[in-house]
Each structure stands twice: as structure tokens, then as C-alpha cells.
Amino acid sequence: MSKKKVTIVFDIGKTNKKFFLFDKNYKEVVREYTELPLTTDEDGYPTEDLPALQNWIKENFNAILDDENFEVKAINFSTYGASFVHLDQKGNVLTPLYNYTKPMDQDILDLFYEKHGGKLKIARETASPQAGMLNSGLQLFWLKYKHPEVFKKIRYSLHLPQYLSYLFTGICVSEFTSIGCHTNLWDYDKADYHDWVYEEEIDALLPPIVPTSASINTSYRNKKIKIGVGIHDSSSALLPYILSKKEPFLLLSTGTWSISLNPFNDESLNDEDIENNCLNYMRIDGKRVKASRFFMGNEYKIQVEKLCDYYGKEYGFHREVKFDQDLYLRLMKHKAVYFRFEGIILKRKMITATDLNSFETFEEAYHQLMIELMDLQIHTIKNAIGNSEIKNIYIDGGFTDNDVFMKLMSHHFQHYNVMSTHSPLGSALGASMVISNKKIDETFLQQHYQMKVLQPLILNY
Image 1 (cartoon, helix red, strand yellow):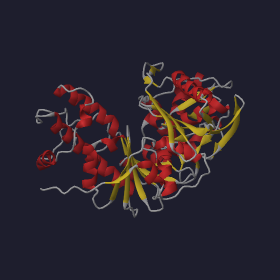
Image 2 (cartoon, helix red, strand yellow; image 1 turned 120 degrees about the horizontal axis):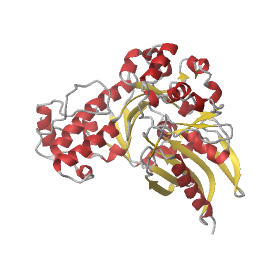
Image 3 (cartoon, one colour; image 1 turned 90 degrees about the horizontal axis):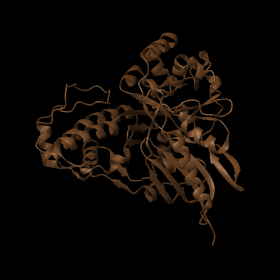
Image 4 (cartoon, helix red, strand yellow; image 1 turned 180 degrees about the horizontal axis):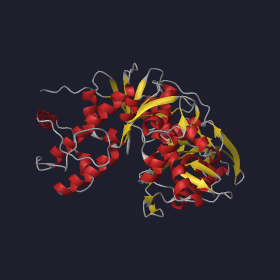
């Protein structure tokens, strides 16, 4: 019996760790999900358990190598960004994988802006809203001044996708999509590392930049395998659309973050963009993608847990709630802010505490929550579109299963062609495609993404 030739992709999210096998036509052959328990860093802050992640990757990889049904031809990695692994001369890991939500010491931030220019200037030049640890370049600055004894030992700092690749190749590289995602490292207008990176001599810790499509041929247990250099998950999720669609579009990628990605807007960001939490991601060819984002999935989870507690529902109940037009219209008649958001910094009316007394049922409060989140979603999508001629909006990720969210999207963007693209493959598929030379055509998304055009709501006001 001939073995099926496959590409392995490890797709590492903050919550779900996924493992995929794709055949040569990008059809999914195997998919595994797991959640790994977190550990803590030296300050007791929760963070990814790097050894546990490595073990899980190695176990899955070895199991597929031992499986008589498969012949592994290639491996690649897509992961969340803003996360560095710091290695010493011998390749040992020096620090925990610091969580990008960890607060950064104010005195370090003050020192950085004092030395290298104001917050707005840095944000504009690096297309990175200023957000402490989420600007991964600042993690290096923080280590240099907070833990100089550790910083002195660093030989290379690798973003997480490149570290996972390094585990298989032993070769340290940097790659555009990881460098370009809100890291504070890249000056988009100069198309080089920002001046501060050279002034602090941090460039010496960043390995040579290679194209995202680069791969390294290695021999593993006497088998020849092509190993990719990894890709940032947001850029990876965008890739299948860029490769198969010729008309301009916006991709709304939903999950922990809701990110509006516009690959057809390459204007430099201005001060107003920065204030609106706009940023740039990078395409695999180094071109900029205008994006705006907010911490929607994170906020949603916090608020839904509170709703479940308040109304005595089991967590998960919210997944069954369907859009109720009468409820929606009633809430819109007396539109107001009832929820105090905890993790979202976009401008909105601030209230001191969430008020659930006004809602009789879980469903009613849930609709109100979605209305308030949708107000921010509309704002961020319009910022990303800017002055681009966009007619098509694709929505992918976790919120495509949320009936209330999708109905509200179809209502508010009825002058656009809005499509849900249901693919649990998301960023994994892009990681598989980037190291293959196979051309794809217009029908690709239709085959792989169960695309559905959303019908605008006819609301009887």
C-alpha cells in the first residue's frame, strides 16, 4: 500500500494548540486539538509552558513518522505573535516565554520613550500601537534594563514560529511576518529595523532575515523532510485569500483578537490611525497590510462567564443563542451602554459597573453585549478600509459560529458583499501553502472554506 504524502502544520494559538496533516491538494487528512496547562514566569504571571509545548509537538511528529499510512514531506508552523524565545550561545532557553498580556514596568517604558522618541512617533514609524509586552521589541529593551545579567547571555532572540522551526533544524532565522506584527522593531517607511534597534544594539540578537517561503531541507531518521521557517498566524490566515482572490477585499479574522486586515491599503499610518488602534501587519513579500484590531474574543469570554454566573447558566449555553429580531429592535429603541469592558481600550462611554438589572433573561443581556461589541467592530472595520475601494468582506475564525454576531455583521455591512468562510484550518492552511510551489485559482476558497454569502437582514422597525 502506498503511503499518503503529507505536510504537517503545527498551529499554535494562545488557547488551542492544533496539529494538521494536509495532502498535496491542501485537503485536511488529520486534525488534533489540545489545550495545554499554563505555567508561571519568575513573577508568578501565567505564561505558555514551553517544555510542555515542545513535548506535545515532538510526540505528534514522531507518531506521524511512525505511522505506516503517511510519508511526511514538509513541516511548517504558524503561531501567535509578540512572543520571543531567547537562546544562549549553546542554544539553551534563557527565560520563560513571557506572556504578551504581562504588564510592563512603567519606569522601563518611560526610559524607552525618553531615549527614542515619543509614544506617538514610535507607534507611527513602527505601525505598532504602543502596548507594552505586545510590542515584542520592547521585551528586549525591558530585559536589557530590568534583567541585564540575562540579557548579556542572549545570543539570539527568535519569535515563536521561528523557534519551533529551530527545534527541527538547529538554524536561527528571522522572518518578515513575525518582525512586522506590532513589534516596534520595523520602520515601515524605511523598510528596515527602526533606528532604536540599532542604537540599543538589539539588531545583533536578531538572526538573518529570510523570506517566509524559505524552507530548510533536512534528513530526519533517514527521511528527507522540508522544514518551513514558520509564519505569524494573522499573516498566515490572510494568505489563502491573497493567493486566490484578485478583487480587493477585507478579511475580518475573529478569535481572541478581532482583526480587520486590508491588504489593499499601503498608506503610511497617521496619528489618527494610531489613536484608533490601527497597525500594520506584513505580507510574506514584506508589503504592508493595514489593520485595526480590538480584544473582542477576550472581552467576550470575560463577559459571557459573568452572564452565565448571573443567570445561573452553564458556560457554553451562549453558543445556542440565536439572533432574535424583536429583542434586537427593542434594545435598539433605548440604546445605551450597559457593560463595563475590562480589556478593551478603544474609546467608548465608560461606566463604573456592568448593569444587568435591566435585562430579564440571559438572551436579552447577551444580545445587548453583542450590540456593544458590534459598535466597536464597525468602527475598527471602517478604519481598516480607509479610502480603499473594497466591496467584499470575508469573515473567518471563531465568531463565524456566533449567530448574533453574523446577523449583525450582515445588517451593518449590507452595502458590501459579506461572506462567512467557515474553515477550521485558518492560519494552518496558509502555513502549508507558503512552503509549497503549487499554484491555486479562484475556486480554491469555495472548495476549502464553505463560503456563504450573508443575506442582509430585513428589519421591520
